[in-house]
Structures are given as C-alpha cells and as structure tokens.
Length: 83
Image (cartoon, rainbow, N blue to C red; front, side):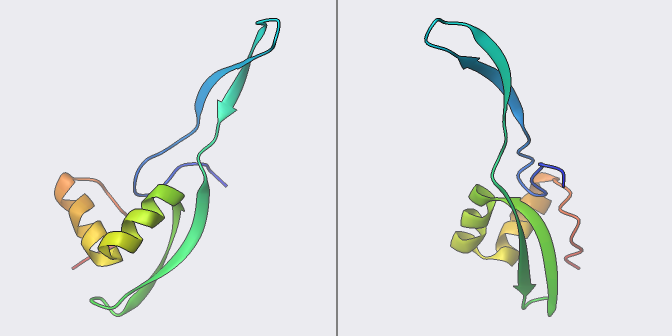
C-alpha cells in the first residue's frame, strides 16, 4: 500500500536517526495513512479513500462534501466525481 494521502498529498519524508554519540543514519518519517469509507449524501454514494489522519479530522470538521468541494476549487484532483 502506498503511503500517500489521496487528498492532502502527504507522503514519506527522510531524515536522520541521531544516536547519543551523534552518529547519523538515514530513516523515513511515514504519515499515518488509513483506509476510510465515506457516504456522500449529496451524491447518494459511498467512496473509499486512503487518507492521512489530519485529512480525516478535517473531513469530520467540515463534512466530506464540503471538503472535497474546497479541494476541487484549489485545483486538487480528488478522484471523486462531484457532479
């Protein structure tokens, strides 16, 4: 499963593990991606999305339809047909 959020675009970033002796080794910081199923009452259909937990929190705050409309206005492809 790819570790990229479908809506926010969050993806793994790289950094260093730093030991007590200050030796640095490469590591990856992986976003918390969850598979979540949403019902959109305006379209009367279910959609399954792979989202970061911050995107899920935003959807819970705004509503799934409003959040998808907001991203569509910004020009971000959500993969969900809203019309």
